[in-house]
Image (tube, rainbow, N blue to C red; front, side, top):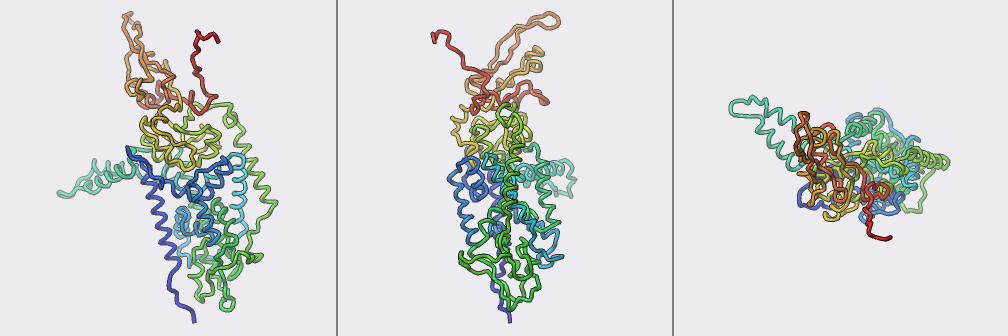
Length: 544
């Protein structure tokens, strides 16, 4: 006779997963810029509970924010309960579970047994390679962190795509709605448009460079679930590998009753993580996601999870099975990959890319790359949409890290949100006053295109919009002669390099929409003493 179940474990797990998934997206939506309101520290709570960000940042930068120590809670939970973060909390893991169910149907009705494979060790070797890179200052592992990957994809690709669909759809309905008598379809679409405009998107028509590539990476990881359930979690996830190292001998372990187990392998068929090497026994704690599908699928109640002392060693078939030679090879591969990534003049500090304008408060480039995870949180809160993912401007090592693109959006003179929300302090938090004294670039005129220079006609747009109280752009009246020989006075603008902070407002408002006649480059940025073309003026009365 079997015992009656009181609690359905998988249903409880799915409810918890849904709560954390909703919380993740709710915090992402709440990260919208709101004038006069400081962002809540809860906006980057998920990142502070991420052990991979803690370990990789500490290895790369030798320092971490105090809040990142909250990830020790997850490590402690993993030591006790196993990889329950992957199976119950991780929002990307939940999305992969949903995709797996879409491709393979209900977990109790898979097409074939799904046992552990040595290919699942690949994620551990990838982790070793990435951590070797981090130890030498390469923070690239964070790009593949599941929380970072999902946040960046949602910020850069999914939300802007949804915004476009809502705005264009509402406009189309408003323009073409024929109505049925007094009823109009736009009476439904307009409230939706206004609600999302004011409380979800905020930045009008927001779009990001390289969004297609970021979305493509995400789509590929989802499509791999058609080949194996939760493919990312089993074979590639670096955070899952790190937690697997802590979960190889947890205090809560699966136990089998051999007297009732008939080796039907229903547990192996339902397992999300392919944690069993054979029917019944051979359970690998490091691969178990704690989904509880195995105990729920066993009709004989032959499986249960119970406490086990840390001194109890795992059986030979339950150990990780990592090869020292392969681990050393992975570490060497990581070092070699970092050497190739840095095999260009820019990464070695011999070249400063003119369009690599970092947000105010950014650390010197090497320190910045040692901390930045390319999560996209700073881009999400930018009220003008000017912060964009770097593609080639920062080299391969700086892929998808933030940079200012003035043509798309400028750095608001009264805003300091990017530094307040950065989870790793790659962008330091500055007061508005300190931020306004920080130079991120320098504006310069292209006199072959600037209207007062090239066409002898007045244009004061850049000077009028300059936010500096004393105006970094000033005008000089010059007498010119037109083609008929008539003389007239034209006001030609100039940039004061001592006042210009490189905010990009002038470039953003320039009448030229293809290539502005005034452009901001990274020259004169405060964080880089080697990129200072404007030398301090000498006092010729000083005898020394």
